[in-house]
Image 1 (cartoon, rainbow, N blue to C red):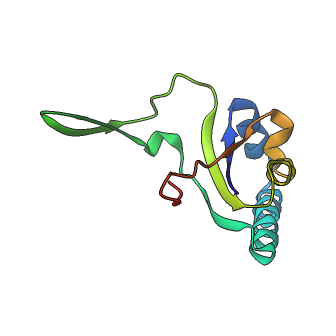
Image 2: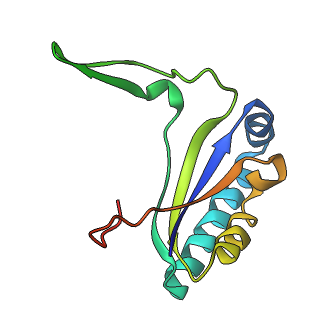
Length: 124
C-alpha cells in the first residue's frame, strides 16, 4: 500500500536547522540521501522531494472568469510543508517506522497518510 510521508517545518525546527554550521547541514542532507537510498534499495521508494520556501508558493483559484495565481504563503499556520516521501510498503506500521527516522519527528512534524486507491484500481 502507498503512504505519503509529509515532513513539515515550523519556527522551532527552522531555528535548529539555521543554527547548524554548513558542515552540519551537509550531514543533514546526507542523512536524508541515506534514507532515500535505503528505500530505493528496498523497493519502497516511489517519490520524494524537498520543497522550496513557502514564500515562493502560488495559490491558484479558478472561477468562471478564469484562473488566477497569487503570491503565497496563504495558510494561517505555523507549520508549512517542507517535503515529502511517497512510499509503497507492506503496512502502515512500516510507513510509521520510516517516518519516525526523520529528524522532524522529534518536533511532531511528520505525518503519515494512506493514499486512496480509486475504484478503477489506479492510485490518485
